[in-house]
Image (cartoon, rainbow, N blue to C red; front, side, top):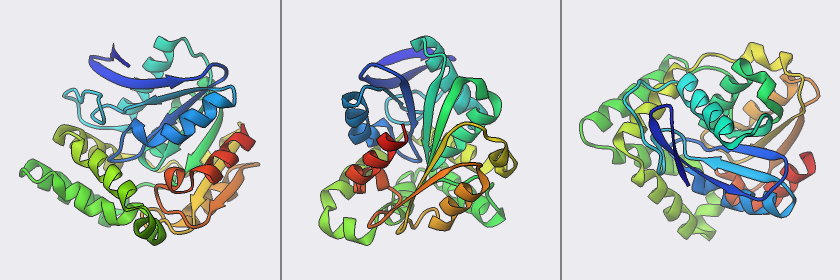
Length: 260
């Protein structure tokens, strides 16, 4: 489905009826990553809402500089359009950065949160340099530099060996992302603030899902989140990397549904 919000066409899917669960994809991915969760949520009596962030999947980029404020405001506009006053929100990696922005600026709209292979701290200078390098590569006409850089980081070694078709499918999602979307996402990641001070202030139920073989965001970042957030539950998935929700979808869904 598509609707026009904040001057762009925003694509999203809905599945099921009941309490709303908004799932925010990572970089440089799209809403297709949530297919196993949308099906499970709908079957369990929830309303799964899975958008393509601005510039990703089938959503338009617009012309603004990328920021977590911009991406978060799009999602609030989508919730308003769908008539959802309050939702559970889950964010994976970059989606977690957008989720932290939402929790800081629109706390009244969310009843619970799920931090999925993500972190609360900002990029250091080394990381910012890597973002700038990729932005320069994209602007020089080499957008494939992004999928080349990210593919080795996304999966546990066992997944690559056992499910090469999954790796190729995800690589296809990355390759299909527009150059403008890639730049927008990298700008938003590079310029995000440090949200560490927000964590002890969270008063809603929180689930943190980490992956023991995550090469993109170290698993200790998930442990750190759970320790800083009052009452947070921690689930560390084995034999899973950064794409934990599709590498170990049954274990992931069990943890998510138990939390809900």
